[in-house]
Length: 265
Image (spheres, rainbow, N blue to C red):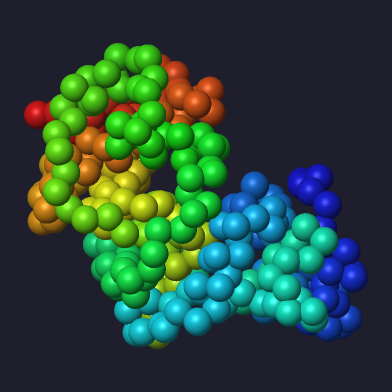
């Protein structure tokens, strides 16, 4: 049972949710119990910051193909992307399937082609949450955290030659599949890194949490430039995040051990 406060009726009206659908408001799985759906509108708390507005501006007009689609942001009655601490998005049907690794990579590749010409957004320099800090740690832009596993992985850092662009850094659980529809890519986590790093995060997550064999992780990564180096940095990214969140323990270390060993083999 969630204790999250739902959006008010005034917020629903601002985002065009008709009165007949107000009573159908319910929380959605994921999103820490803070994301709500009313009819075909998804509402979630919004910081109203540069990242929020940038993503809305991009995704409002991003061309879709049969290889991928994304939810469109819904403006308020005044035309703003946020109102009273809420943002609204089009609801798209579908379900994540973390075992469909190659399908996730294919959808991610199409998405990354579509955003390849975007400039580096300024808000990335202002982010200091655990994920942003861990991304910088993985790319040697912030001091490495103590810890044997991180030290071992960082000892294998080598230069990466692949160019950077805007990527989605959390694809595996955020590609939604629906029969006869293109995969839907949701909850964009933007970073400025090589596309291979985004792929490597998918592969590392699948190996550590969803049964992908570490050897297959390396094989799929090896199809891309700097593949093993991206895997090493993806593992540093995830482990450093767990460290900063205070949840890295012996059980987590055991869960990641096989993927780490494969990356360093």
